[in-house]
Length: 239
Image (cartoon, rainbow, N blue to C red; front, side, top):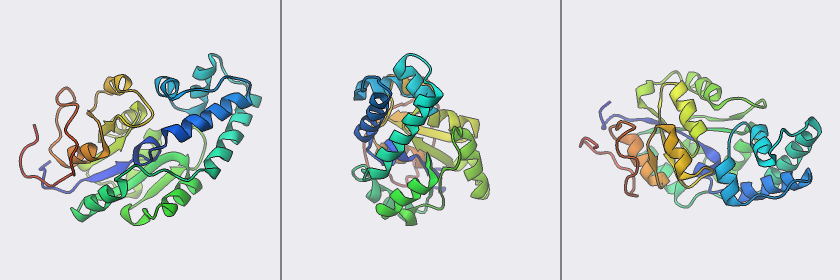
């Protein structure tokens, strides 16, 4: 793929475009306390984070949660999410606008409940940047399945020009399963050490992720961090 060609960026929401780690830690802590388990801190959250959510709580509890406990967890979590104001990551709106102005296309894909995702995107006035916005319609849907469905709904774009930008190894696994590239950033829900196991580029900001997405891809074993800068169209080969 030539660096001059437009790309399609699939954005993750929680932990990526949203800077909501502290919000999620508070919500998960409330869920844990509601079933008689201790609250978690940010370090524990990032070290233990996994999907689906029930497996995450199993890890935090050190045992499988019961059906009754899971019902309490899902209700408590939904209450916290309904009450939150989505904290957009600094500079994210400007970055989305710049990517669109360069002629690239974008979509949003999240395992957040679809109605809540659309409500939050509308609250932040980001609707016009995305060709599609897709959230979760049923519990325990793998992100790889959701990504396959979104790509089909987009008319099956050339997967060589599709890049998923996210913050977890699950994002990288979904991209790999669908034959698209992924770039992960370190400001979200998982530690740098864990992200480095994903076999995909890892960078330290959304700007750096977007810049890498629109340039010539590198091999996963090559550069895993690039300087923070505004993404640009560039005809030079990226090394």
